[in-house]
Image 1 (tube, rainbow, N blue to C red):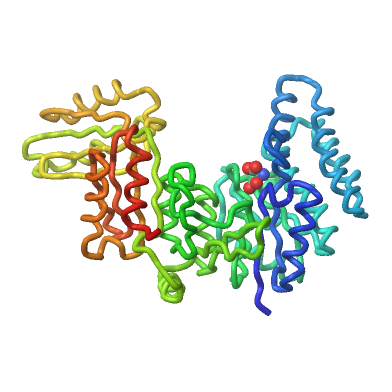
Image 2: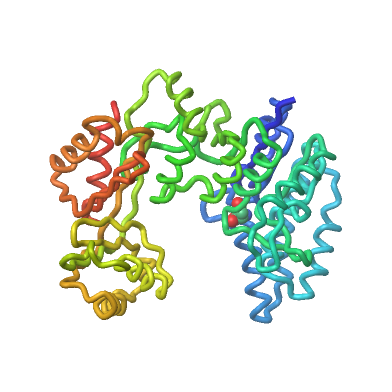
Length: 445
Ligand code: ASP
């Protein structure tokens, strides 16, 4: 039988009402056999996420303040749902076990992970599925580095014993048994791991939006939804700031060629966005009634471009290597390194530079001896992404004409060799205007 893995995010599992919705969804398709859950999220704006409260328990503990009351607030959230849905499972012994462990000053990872742990126990009871702890399936080495192969094997072995199961997202364990979490939002990764390991038919990621939009709705009014996007295109889009899915959640599904479907718990009829291999993308796109040339536009502000000029630079071996060495010394991940004859530009986010621009420029000057250095600050980068887009005649012309007509000055251009995107750098102040212009030029109303 086909197997689907369905992951439900914090807002989809925030209270009894949401849990009733997810039960409907799960029960309406018996192939939804493995359910991965986040900790309860916000029920209304201003509410607390359970994970945030749990991190606060740790901070309180570290400041030698009484934390029991705060932990009680966490337990009360589950108890309320338990009562509301008339569940039978014994939550009290799970709370007691955690309370005992809290006396030993456990790690922040352990404490934070209990949000997912308790929720999975509760939801397994609600659905009548087995509870299977991620602790025994998601593996890290002693340095806390994630182990993919070991994890895939452990998942296959464990799930072979369970036809229907609920699995807590976000964490796994170290070789000594201690709990280790992924970064925030990491339940998406757990879902992808389960789906990849068992070669699921689909990895459904249920959240509170109907998939990806072609542009940020705060900038473009009512942007169209993206129906199909390839893994790679999404990588380009998320890299630039669109974030519905944890970045690291793509890889495990992708290596097993499992499609990821972003769905909306509050609007389950909407087909959402499919994230697939380029081959599948082409098939799906050919079936779509209308398709724009581009898949989406994403961007973010606050970058700095440092351009180094040096006569006969291309003859000088090791110039770029030395640039990278300096960036390495400052622990900076650069964004792009566009180069021309006798020039190389380094594009870095201001966050990475972290107030050290002057120091870095001094290093560039003394270690690279360029003829001159040019610095442009407050640059926004905008990526226009589309499968095979740049291979199509006229795409660049459309893009640049749209920006020129909107009075936007382009400070930098980088067309990735992937043929998937064209990135332009514009003034921070022109960010919204540029995105609106690009959207208007490519997307049919
Ligand atoms: N509960 C965790 C967080 O809030 C993980 C997740 O929801 O994916 O980051």
